[in-house]
Image 1 (spheres, rainbow, N blue to C red):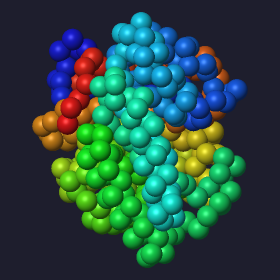
Image 2 (image 1 turned 60 degrees about the horizontal axis):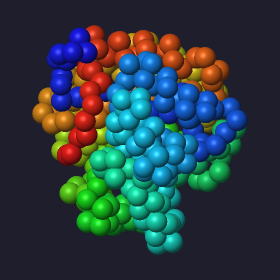
Image 3 (image 1 turned 180 degrees about the horizontal axis):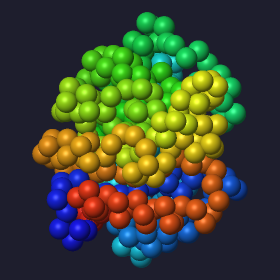
Image 4 (image 1 turned 90 degrees about the vertical axis):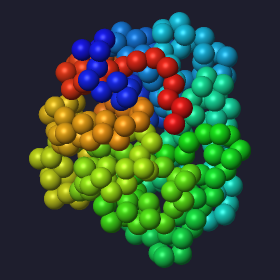
Length: 310
């Protein structure tokens, strides 16, 4: 199936997150050379950068390491806190420019923007779960300005990643965010797992905001475990340690109709596998990654070299 996928416009890749990598440097994470080796061994040709500083940030060195394993870079991630106002926006521009200095020379144009959360690794609240109207205005106005900066100054694509335990996770929050931001420069990274985790509707987002979707993270949620997490009022990081994100097809959303809907958008999309599992045993990710790639091949989605320009 990998040779002639049913949905050639959907390009399957993976990310350090699927190897339990959440930080640039952490003794609980696999070293980056092992990650790249195992991405190749699992049969992928596309990878995301992961936390900035985990993989080499010098573009020449990074190119050498990727080329040695037949890998292509799809994009990078930047964490922002734009609801905090102008200073946070200016820092976000600096961080986006640094990320693009690494990924753009390799042909990668997609920046995945993640919002600051309100819980820590122990699940404790670190901020209010709700934004004020002024904070919402700072978030949406700031994101629109950041999107215009990324597009205008760097010819890159800003894709916003909704996230569990952040201020943009539920259906209402996602719609408020999308309706309040510049549709020309603020796109959506549809993370299917985080959308499902927060009780939002992936299929409705694809239908109602088709033109905003520019990047995809493929992920599934164990619904029974999610119900337990909700009942016990656990934070997202503790939920991940319990195994709330599972390999397909063991969770939700149901992937075949979702992939068909994404293919129906009729444009090339990176579909990056992410199975949150920080921390995890070093021997665990590779077999899961192989099975996951094989599963998506049966669904008509394969990993292929080359960059997506849109």
